[in-house]
Amino acid sequence: MRILVVGAGAVGGYFGGRLIEKGEDVTFLVREKREHQLKEHGLHIESIHGDFQCMPQTLRAEEKAEPFDAIILSTKAYHLTGAIESLHSFVGEHTMILPLLNGMSHVDDLIEAFGEEKVIGGLCFVESTLDEKGNVIQTSPIHDLVFGERSGERTERIMSLEQAFSGTKANFRLSDTIEQDMWHKYLFITTLSGVTSLHRAPIGPIRETTDGADRIKAVLSQAATIMRNIEAPLAENIESAQYDKISQMGYSMKSSLQRDMEKNLAVEADHLYGYLLEAAEKQQVKAPDLGLIYGNLKIYEIANK
Image 1 (cartoon, rainbow, N blue to C red):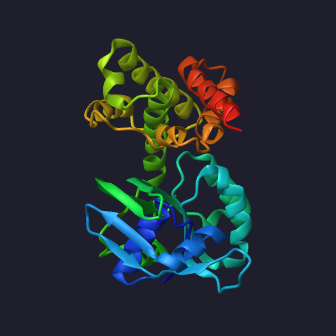
Image 2 (cartoon, one colour):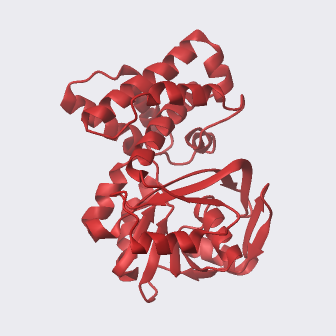
């Protein structure tokens, strides 16, 4: 199976590298700067699950190539429009597009660009970053990529993809409930990223205070209410389950959004929070804590233009 990974950063570089390590045919679609870096120094993964390095195949958007069997989309939401524009010549009749973005609005964008049948469901949980040399640094026991047909069916193509993903040094898992899995992650990320970025602190100190613990519960409740009103398939007890999960996280755990803010990088304010608040306005639902988080991110964006 020919696999194109869009982006060779902390997420795409990690999972794409693990697939290369296994022996799969992987190409990275990259910009000029990252291509130069990879061609000069190679792809380096430093991980508690084992280090790996290679000289990967790379491709630029303006270059030509035959359509790929599967495309793993690992960009940030603010790069999605550009990524979609760059992909058209690499998408064939039977190409599967597997997005790993947080949130849900990108699914509609991909369907509009490539059609309902091309887009499958996906998400990932991995704590990884690029160092100053462009090496992928992966530091957590969790390195999960979950995928599946959005219909929940076990189709021939999804079983072929599972076969390609099997046997790697990362946890690739086929799910029959990927739509629900994606919404659950959206709820979790909305809460964890929201409270840590708002308070500029790891999760431990936040949940130790009454106000912090109450805010975690409020964000979970407000986001879940909005999601259920737009018929997201959330589990009945998901708020309490996710609060328990957040309560058990390491004291010094920071969200990737918070880390991006610490580095003065772009954030996904509209993709994660604007989307929910727009739905809340249509529903005439009040979501003050979500609004506070969104306002904090928009002020950050203005200050960092």
